Image 1 (cartoon, one colour):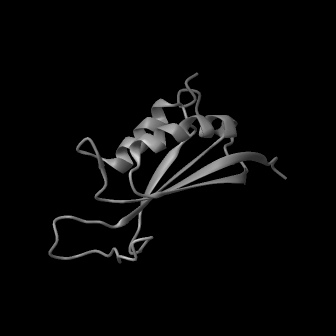
Image 2 (spheres, helix red, strand yellow):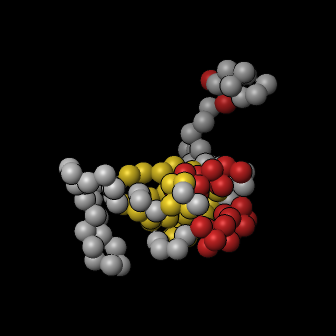
Image 3 (cartoon, rainbow, N blue to C red):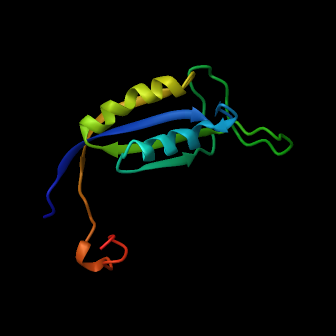
Length: 120
């Protein structure tokens, strides 16, 4: 059995139309996570949803502005994730950030990855 490690997972709920200085907020968060050296970040677009405002967010055929829900997931060790939290406080005006302890199982087989791809 593969060994399990503990980590923290950030799950960030925002809207597709949210911006940071005229840039999509989800892109700013993912790029800042990369700059901070976090292990990875992925943004997912929701199909439909609602939050604290109870406003239903759904695709609109005739709308230029999409306000679909977005979820960004970041997983890394606790120290790195906790150092990144002030960045999220700076960037997010409205949204929800969930921090939870998770167990991770790394499925990377380094022997099957070519040396050039590993940077070697």
